[in-house]
Image 1 (cartoon, helix red, strand yellow):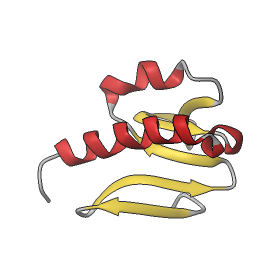
Image 2 (tube, one colour):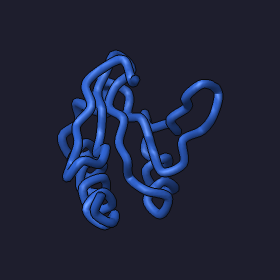
Image 3 (tube, helix red, strand yellow):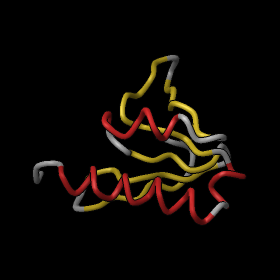
Length: 84
């Protein structure tokens, strides 16, 4: 579906990684600050923006501090979702 690896938490999509970088499910409330980070952009699929998802380019994904901040937000959001 994403052209790379997908990682789930309790059966819910947490993040994915592929040639374009790291895709993270940070949630709508974290999207604004995440998109202000250089190298982070909205996720587009089939011409449609996926709200609550961001993509960190490969260079940004390699920065440990930025990656941790984004992953922490993705973990918190995904854990907050109701069980399947």
